[in-house]
Image (cartoon, rainbow, N blue to C red; front, top):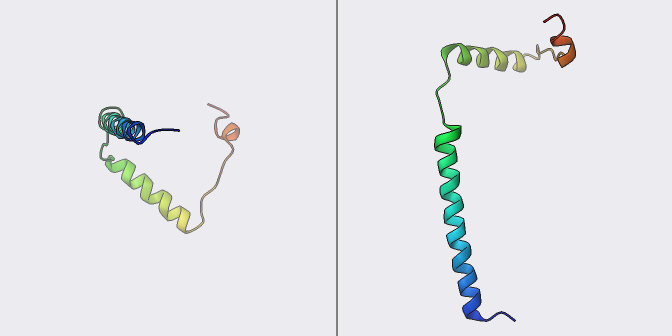
Amino acid sequence: MTSEVELKEIRSLLLDLNKKVENINNLLERNLIGCEEPLPDEIEATKEYESAKENQKLELVPWNKATKGT
């Protein structure tokens, strides 16, 4: 059986570990992933895609057909 003191110590270790993992996630998010505002042409392309999606005018092309001739 695990004593109450041991359980408190385990809990404390888990809380410390959780804080460290959160800090690592924050660093990764901020430094590696980053967040940049989209460029104007990217915004326009997104709007066109959303519009085509709403109007059901999207055409899915298999990758091998899309890359033929390049």
